[in-house]
Length: 250
Ligand code: SAH
Image (cartoon, rainbow, N blue to C red; front, top):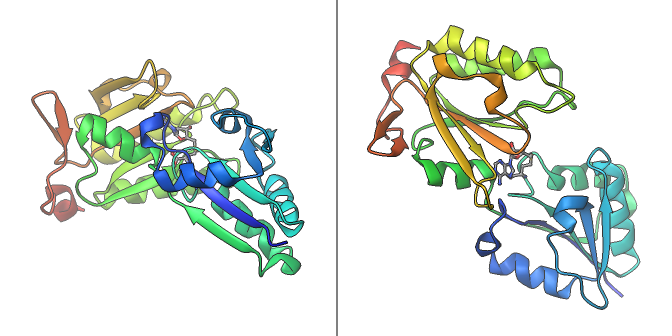
């Protein structure tokens, strides 16, 4: 019996934003693997086993998915948003590197709508020009590298989207990130805090960098920083598509 591993993105939260392709994969799965709250988004049914796990055990979880597929099961590994953006797809391939015996398994990645794109659509078009996506968590990389990337992305005139901006175990680093951004961009560039995007209680807040405070972000927030040309038009926030003055001055 040939099993499979499908690594699927569930989108940012709204049921309407789960793709038909992902829905179809969930319907034929025998096993769902992932972080508890994401596994909880899958409707239980007969013949489907849900394997929720803690969020720091990605490679163990991925190895388990590969083992089950090798036994003939149809496993769907779920992530929120897109599985390739700071999520399970890379973890599965990391696990695969350690297990040559699984190299010929049927493994597929199904995209989802990532948080920054869902948030950008609610704001208007803040990512309409070049941008960088940065994970502010230092679980898997040193904080010094994050600071360097922030500074260079700001100097290069990129708009930015920050994932995992601030957690209980990392309460102060987001404040340091704001300080770096103000040093590089000044006080007037717009920053948007987008919490629970497409979910009940969605909150969007856009302020100039000079008014941003660290408590505006938490782990349910994706943060979008504009470039020097990002502006408001009516209630919307957008970045023009033409070369920004920020890139000329960079
Ligand atoms: N793979 C996911 C990202 C996982 S990292 C994706 O593509 O969206 C987890 C971080 O994503 C959170 O800390 C937060 O910054 C962001 N995030 C995920 N869903 C979100 C939502 N509905 N609203 C706001 N931010 C969200």
